[in-house]
Image (cartoon, one colour):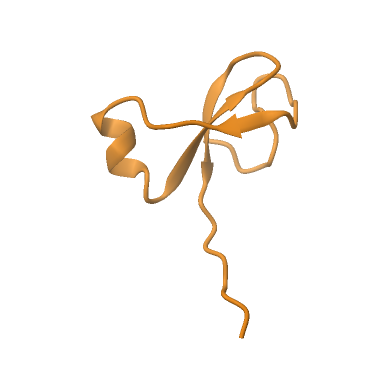
Length: 55
C-alpha cells in the first residue's frame, strides 16, 4: 500500500483507478482504493482519505 500519490514501482504519477479483482479487495475497498499505473502496469492501493464537504 502506497502513501504517496505515485506508483511505488516506477514513481510515475500517471495512474488510474481500477475496480476490485476479488473478495479480499472487496472487503478492504472501504479503506483502500485500487489503482493501476499507466506506465508500468503495476497494481497498487492508496489509502482513501475522507473529503470534507464545504459548508
